[in-house]
Amino acid sequence: MAATGNTKQATLKIDDKSVELPIYSGSVGPDVIDISKLYGQTGMFTYDPGFTSTASCESKITYIDGDAGVLLYRGYPIEQLAQGDFLETCYLLLYGELPTATQKKDFDDRITKHTMVHEQMARFFQGFRRDAHPMAVMVASVGALAAFYHDSTDISDPKQRMIASMRMIAKVPTLAAMAYKYSIGQPFVYPKNSLDYASNFLRMCFAVPCEEYEVNPVLAKALDRIFILHADHEQNASTSTVRGAGSSGANPFACIAAGIACLWGPAHGGANEAALQMLAEIGTVDRIPEFIKAVKDKSSKIRLMGFGHRVYKNYDPRAKLMQQTCHEVLAATGHQNDPLLKVAVELEKIALSDEYFISRKLYPNVDFYSGITLKAIGFPTSMFTVLFAVARTVGWISQWSEMIQEPNYKISRPRQLYLGSEKRDYIPVDKRG
Ligand code: CMC
Image (cartoon, rainbow, N blue to C red; front, side, top):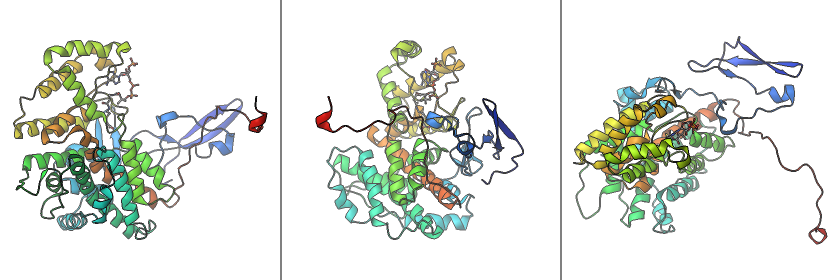
């Protein structure tokens, strides 16, 4: 445990026995009570389904203050990092510090030189049904990278870990674009190394061999910012999955595939699709009051998608930047009069002044405006979570790497509250009644 200064102790009383538990302070944020020796001292486990009160690791990467609406990567506020570019954020997450101009150029070059995937991967894709969901293709194809880089990835070697990390950041967009192209029956577009990360991704997704493709710089900038906003988010479900998979010493490409699988669920990466669908269902501004009424009626089970967050009990700082990005993209694509934008703006205004949402501290989250934005850039809804995976790859791999570097990291192995049968005897099938 690197967190020091543990002069504070918690006392846990169980019947007439007292147990002293050390309390550690992080650099910012709540203190934690160390219960790692609790079972040895008391024969009891703690119970915390969904880990709502449990710190699963120590980390120096991302900090969220949900009450204040603050998100920091390596100490830097997301609003400030959004002024730079995504690869700068990648460098920061991986190495812990912002790069100098020379380091940045070298990093950009190295990522760019890893963007191609093995040509055999194209043949691997032919095995998918043409209507396969791009997320299913992502889980499989990123996992398949493990087959290409298994023997060359000794995770105990920091140099090889960094090469694997770079490969992942470089190749996941290529696979994501291939998954999209495959789903619409168009030929794969090879990466173009003269383009920046987001421009290259847009080109791989939207160019066709029979026409010239010019990247719209406003859309490239917007996508780059969307990647920054999604790059890491502390110990969320998919990141915890990557750490859990990696804790057994598994191949890092396979661990990232596990993270992608977890991200796929609608409670995690799939919410922006649901938010967009909700805006389309509301359709016009005059129908908002009726919708808000339905949301407040608990029996309807309708939620205002893109609102509320497990950690943020204030305006999600990513949502503010996403709102600004949304306006820029809609202006650049001539969609500023998109009826969905009108509905979103009015819905947000009404919800933010409504007692139901105020008293429950429900504010817009990053997904409220991201669906409209991604749609205006040209992505179908099936690609929304894929884009999230492209951005989050750097967060996953940075967290994985941080874990592997810990001298005493342990395999992830939670315990349980067992409610099944007590020991009983097996009866052969012919003797069962
Ligand atoms: N619309 C209406 N009511 C809501 C909403 C919402 N979006 N979110 C929470 N509530 C109410 C909920 O009914 C409950 O009310 P009451 O106390 O009267 O029973 C109260 O607020 C607390 O809700 P909760 O479900 O206990 O809160 P949670 O922290 O477990 O849920 C959440 C967080 C994100 C699952 C939830 O807010 C939600 O379902 N939001 C909509 C889906 C969404 O936008 N998800 C994207 C999250 S951001 C992406 C990411 O970071 O991965």
